[in-house]
Image (cartoon, rainbow, N blue to C red; front, side):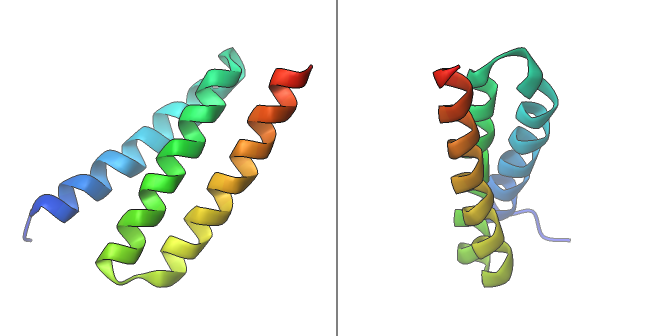
Length: 74
């Protein structure tokens, strides 16, 4: 297995997604962190050539941003 910079970036992105998702109930800011991590996961997917993964992660980022706004509003 080759562990290059792109693989490290992808590992960081999906690990951040897992951590922020687990902490979402504690603060809306963790929801925002999850959205950012999903965006990074999307970038990784497109850079790696796995465009379906990149597309789904981009959708998750938009959904998480909507949840963040809703939680901030009340």
